[in-house]
Image (cartoon, rainbow, N blue to C red):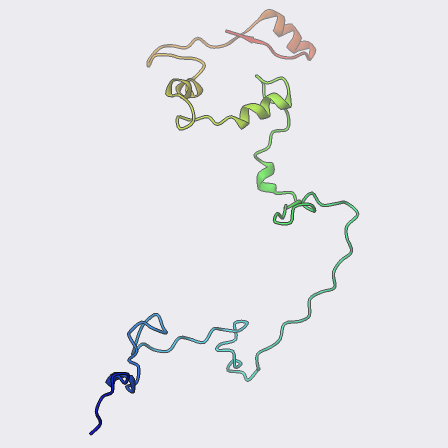
Amino acid sequence: TRQPTPHHHPHQDAAPVASSGWGSWAGMGAPPPRVPRVNGKGKGKGNKRGRQGSKLPPPPPKKEEPSVARRDKDMPLVILNEKRVKAAAKLKVSEVPYPFTSIEQYERSLAVPAGKEWNAISAARGFARPEILTRAGQVIAPIKQSEASKTKAKTGGGKRWEQ
């Protein structure tokens, strides 16, 4: 029999034992991973009709640069969509709303966030407060047209209402 030497270990000749989980996610005894599809043609070896993995057609030739420069040409990580979006066109206003006198003033008011998360609670309540306050069951007088505005309306002028 062989005597163990100080530099020879008895487990040194044994095959390495594979621990579960090493080399795969599922561990020992798990089914092999699926072969990824190539161009949607089954397992990459062609489909049932006998066609071998079809190659993609060559890309179309590059078009010449348009005469109008793109707005994102100096931004390498940005692609701006310059097409008109019909759904967004419904949300745009054609003219400046009443209380505002200029486009800049209106856009400045839109840039400021309005809500209780960003403003004091008293200020946020003021944003949502109605212009006319009435009690439940109170009769509201109808709007009457003044005599001056009646004559303007007949002659084609603008309508003015008073309460």
